[in-house]
Amino acid sequence: MHHQTDYCILGAGLAGLSLADAFQKADFESIVIEKNSIAAGASGTPGGLVNLATGRRATKAWKAEQCYEAIAQNLEKVQSRTHESFYQKNGLLRPALLEKMARKMKAQHEKTSWPEGWCQWKSKAEIQEIHPGIQCVDGGLWLPIGLTVDVGSYLQAYARYLSEKGIPIQTGIDAEIAQSEQGWNISFDNTTIQARNIVFAIGPATAQSKYWDWLPLNLIKGQVATFSTGEEPLNFSHSISSLGYIARMGTRNTFVQGSTYEHDFTHVNPDQEGEEYLRKRLRRTLPQLEEKVSTVDQWAGVRTSTPNYKPILGRHPRNSTMHVFTGLGSKGLLLSKFLADHYVDHLTNGTALYPEISIERVEE
Image 1 (spheres, rainbow, N blue to C red):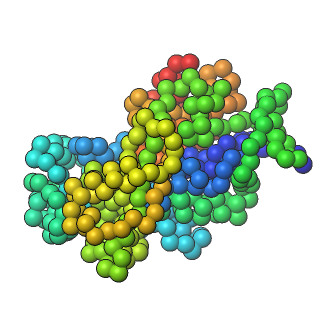
Image 2: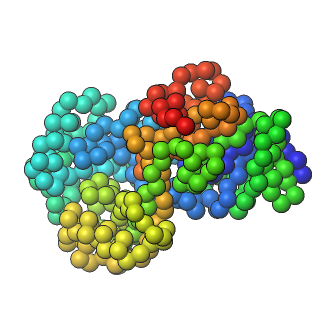
Image 3: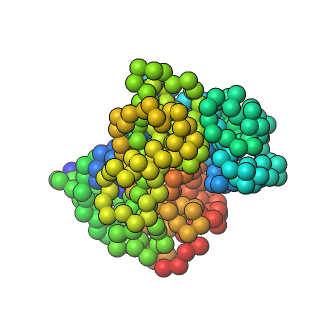
C-alpha cells in the first residue's frame, strides 16, 4: 500500500497530535506514526496541571494568555466530542512554604499584569481557609482558572477525535525512513508513505536521532505517584503547586503527586526512591494527609528540556523538508497546542517564529 501526504508526523504525544490537528485546520494532509502506543511516553502522565504561575517565584508563564486559551479550548473541544471526562477547571493553590519564598512570590505578583480574576494573592489565613491544614508561611497564590488534566486519557481521546476527523494515526510502528526526490519515504510492514515533509515530535528520542543529535537537549526523568486515602474522602477539590504538584482529579479519594526531576538516572522505571521522594514533598505541604495515604500506582517518563527551558521548533538548517518540535519539558500541556498552531501559521503564512522557541537560536 502506498500513501501520499504533505506531512508525516513521527510521534503521537502532545506535540505530534497538536500538529496534526493544526495541519488539518490549514488544509494540509498529515499522517501520524507512533512507535509505541498513545500516551506511552512522557506525555502520558496520569495527572498534570495547566499552571500559569511557574517556578519558585510563581512567575507568569510565557505567552500565558494565548497558551491558556489554546489548551482550554482544545480540552473542551475534545471532551465535548468524545463525551469523556479527563479534565476539570478546579483551581490551583500555590502556598509559600518559607518567608523568603512568600516575599518573592508576592513581589512578583505585584509587578505582574494578570487578566482580571486569574491570579490572586491570599494571606496565610485565606490560604488556610481555602485548604485547612496546609503548610503556609505569609500567604500564597490562588488561581481560579487552574486546570487539572489526566493527560494520558486526554491524548487517547484526542487521537480518537483526530482519527474520526480523517487523520490516519498508526501506532506500534517501527518505520524505516529514507529521503527521496519527492521528500521522504516512510516504510513499515507492507506500507510506504510518501511525504513531502517529515516532522520529528518524538520527545527524548530526538537526542538519539542522527538528524537532531546536535540539539542542546537535556533528558530528565520524572516520576509521579497516585495516592489514596482509602474509604475517607479528600476534603479539597482544587489542585496544589508546592514542591512539585498535587493533581486533584474527579475521584473522591485519590490524587496524583508529582514530580521528581532526575537528571542522572540509570533506568526509566518507577522505583522506591521516587516514591519516597514524592512522599517527602507531600509531607512538607500536607503532613497530616501524607501519614494516612497509601500508594496505589506509580508512573515514570523521560522528558526533554533545553538551556532556556523553551521548546525548539523549526526546519533542519540543511534540509527544509525536515522539521522538529521538541523540548517541551514539564510545560507540554500548557504550550503544545499554542505552539503547534503558531508553527503551522509560520509554514503557511510566513509568520516569524518567536525567537525564544525558534531553532535558529541554536547552532548545528
